[in-house]
Image 1 (cartoon, rainbow, N blue to C red):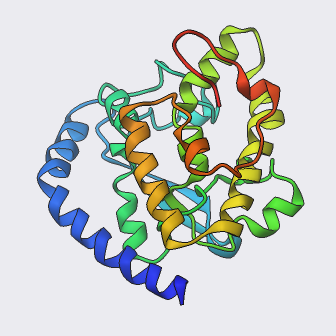
Image 2 (cartoon, rainbow, N blue to C red; image 1 turned 135 degrees about the horizontal axis):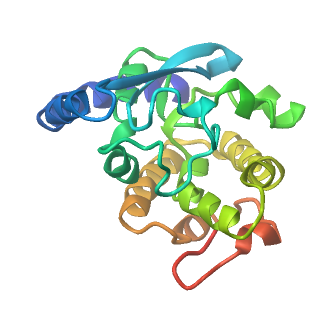
Image 3 (cartoon, rainbow, N blue to C red; image 1 turned 90 degrees about the vertical axis):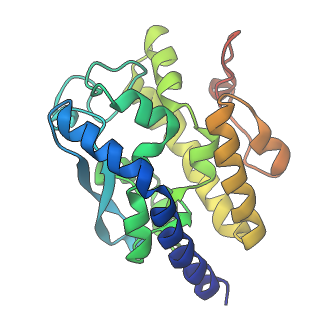
Length: 235
């Protein structure tokens, strides 16, 4: 019953949000067309429901060939590949709003595991790969909330002299996998509502640990994910 009702609300709210935000989205599209490389949307193949591929919609925030440039698929804070409007769109998560089209099409939900590129998906263990997309991927999810300021995290890692890709593969991916498996076991409308609230909260107050207060049974973090400094608490 829950998946059918969730799909109904996904469709209704995605349609409503697109209508309400159209006065905001149209100027953004014009701005993107006139800046950077002049393209508005970014399409990329991602892993979706039942591990099937689909094309995700995003506002273009990085140079078109950025995955082939230095840095690869990992983005750092103030990354030189980010377009003039890209920084603002990524910080506010406005760049994710076109995924409402994916929600309308039934490829995504508001809440679920983030859809990954094949290269990223392959970093998960076989156990996680087998179950992570037993639900539809989401615009937001528990992994998105916990790693709200991922670019800041990876910048700190690089500045510490650690290879960002090694850290991501060996530390972040395993923990993200645990978080998404946790969501599978705890999904409900109440859980989804709390994740949506936490998503909005984390945009305003990045670097907080409110998720661990809302969900006290979240998987424990390794010591590497407890690194802190005076400005940021790394999840």
